[in-house]
Image 1 (cartoon, protein in one colour):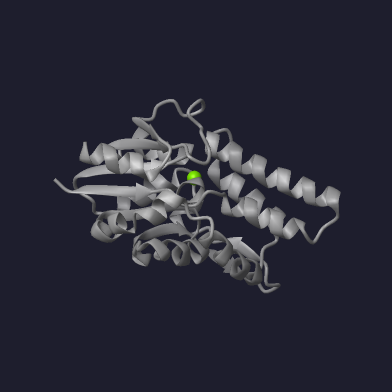
Image 2 (cartoon, protein in one colour):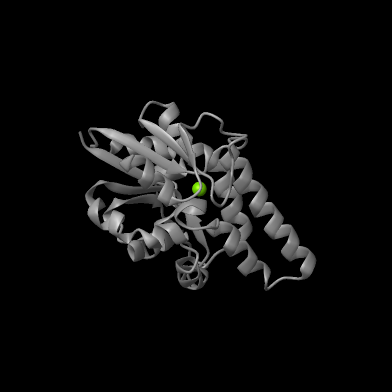
Length: 221
Ligand SMILES: [Mg+2]
């Protein structure tokens, strides 16, 4: 039987939430108080969405409005994120190479910065399913409303459009990752708790791991 691996990006493949990193970056141009407000707003919206307390779509809209991102911010972000790839993922490039046809990334983040980062560990760009930016006339980026991932339960929608037949293992730290198992689209949900342990708010996981080594050990065991 085929076995597929669906990875989350933020706080799983990388140790950070990309939008939180962007909030710090944008905040550096503001006064201390405004900076703190922005960083706290973005972090609380991210965390509410990942715990399932706020709809993903609303959380994304509010964060994009607050951040006022441009293409320059994304150009700045990409090399920063490359330095934040989880150590155990970098150590197992052989795993990503061997299973590359069966490895996917489904993320509520944006493909413009996810693809160049995950290519570093050998994930195929066409196996990345994420949001897309739309540049407005004033240069400010918004989330493309047409992307499946911008919707509530976007990960469930994205997964069910993939023609995967076999065992589907989801690895991620968030409620939206768990939803793929909850809605019956995935066989297993593995909570990735190295960077952010949400085992209290998502106790329905099949397994909890703190590095990629643990996943590979359990597959071989
Ligand atoms: Mg995540």
